[in-house]
Image (cartoon, rainbow, N blue to C red; front, side):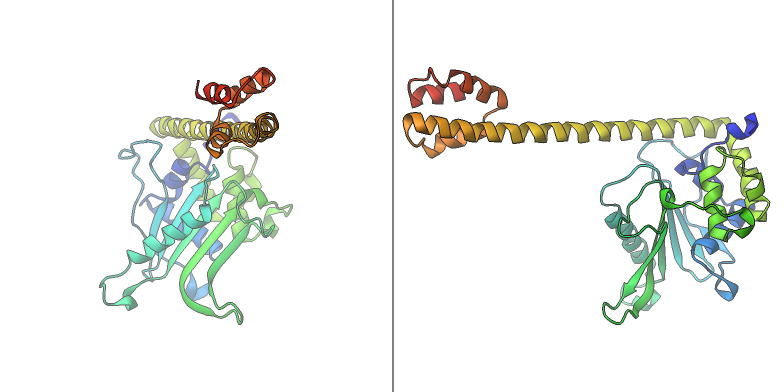
Length: 312
């Protein structure tokens, strides 16, 4: 692998993904249309042939703050809406998040509050570098509104796709890959592995590689990419710290609760059943106070002393 390829930016980064697929440049639209047709399995007259970006990417206007959501919002020739989002870090309630995005996008398609017939089909595509659908090993799952028993579709307006890249593994040679497999290999491996044979299989992949090289050579974009990656890694690190602290606090709470219950039993044997208010205070006491109480339990002469120790 040469130095130039080693320096290619990761297409899975949302800013790189949007710079590739989300601009109004003709080449960007060509590769996005092919990418969408491969994901949605559209052929013949069903194929997407033209798109309009509803939030085109503009590097000069991009602020680079960590709160920016770099999803793609597109309208095709049928006026259908499509939202594409790439995510590297896992997010809580991702299923609800994608349904919320669908509902919001769908509601925006109505032209007249009294005319529901103007609502347009809306499609959400989630491309993730983590697992979320544990019910299956398939990397690509698609969801629609279906009748529970007979499985017929209520309406075609809802369509949600999850593409879990960690589940995507193929030992096929490029010449035997389907279009979606070629694209996912490109997104996963560009800049990491030699994919010369892969991009020979599809003109759109050649265009995508040329664009990725150009994007990767843009100093301003590299600068914003680095800032975006730092913010992402900081967020991931903070989340890991919060989760670890939560686990530690959970263990401490469990330990404190067990110690409090044992102390209540021991004190009740010594002084008789403790007042409910005192039991409640012991149960709510910190682990440090409980440890001190346990050390002094044989020297404590009255319930009043217990009350005093808990208060201090």
